[in-house]
Length: 247
Length: 312
Image 1 (spheres, rainbow over the protein chains, first blue to last red):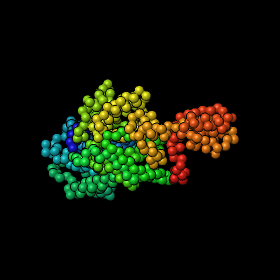
Image 2: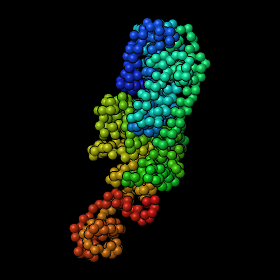
Image 3: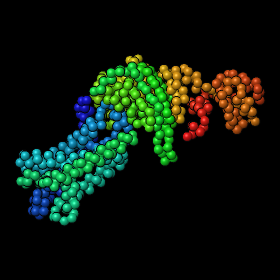
Image 4: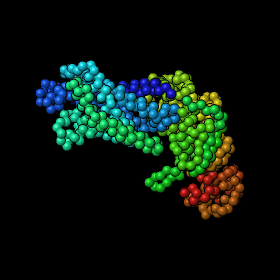
């Protein structure tokens, strides 16, 4: 079945949802200038994070906005379940796979808006990278978001329209905090070691591209992302099956 | 894409369907073993009061709810296959429409999912929503939303159209328009199953009425026949210290009950019963004869079932 029209109109719905766009795109931009602006030339920051503040926070806040964006792709399932729209769709030949794929694609569309705007903001604060570094950095960000896309689908099937926003807001804040969105996670202590087990940590670490590190994740980063992807996908599958059995 | 070789001639078969739900107050047996066979091209009303099991039956027919026991076959296929083939269109009892799209865009979206949809303009014309086609779905009245949902069900160009209390949010005029659209659609040789709790609606628009109560089929037959069976009358009269057994034995009386000093007499033939009543009990006064409501008619039809069976 050709789901091109369906996906196109779902994307149109995303673009028309101005409030959601402002929160996933506008808010990180403002925070970026507030955090990176004053530390623009800070040598201490460079020493601690290994990257200058404008580049660090560019990816840090991009991570925050992108987590919101990609989670909300799946979380919008909660709204559609609340009004019974998913039951209406189940009467059409649209497969569950195509439905979920569209939700993930729409989430990633918002991610791309966030990425482009944060890169533009970064460039205004003096971030300069070779072209291939931009591409690699973007690639790593998109990969690190996969577990969050799956998590969004799980939340969309487990929670209702009223609670999903709060769960997402709280969850993203926690992941962002522990991942290093607001301040660099440094040192080798227990806290830093714990943070390195989170996908959001490696999402933020994608920002180290361009410092010559062609693979800023190393084996550990790839392993953490892979494990989170498998775990979140299993969680999403369980949540989906539990929900459709009951409806 | 699945094609159904048997064609829509095989109709719809529900065999031995049961469904129970667990609730905090104990299990609810929503559907207690029903068998329905619907030929292609038939328009069938599922008639019954709230809680009769109509929606549960429809959800199982559509494959939205797995039955505890029994099977569903739609044109020779399980419901999920019939849906993949684009053979089913449905309008569920509850449900909103998604926002950030216009009425036309939403219909385009749904049409794009089907193998052989009707034209979008044709559906807009058919359901009379041309004036709101470019309006956002969030700016519609209840009746307009209902029409849009009808358009969504029709645009698939289904062989089987299932409607769960489709006119519930509509006023009298909108209801009339809805059914005239339905008639035009049925004329294309489609099979239609709709649930309603209005006897008049079932009688006016269905070839056949299946009467449900307490999760069972109470009666199933041509609309005129069912109407005669449930369209009974009730006589109410003040008659202190009435001899209930004697009243029950009068011709045309099916059931009798007391409410204080009044007797309430359910009749199969109220004219005969009233004549007999006045002949036997000339002191009866303040007499009213009313058409029985559907609920009373059901109670009458189910009266010969044991109460144990009904409350189980």
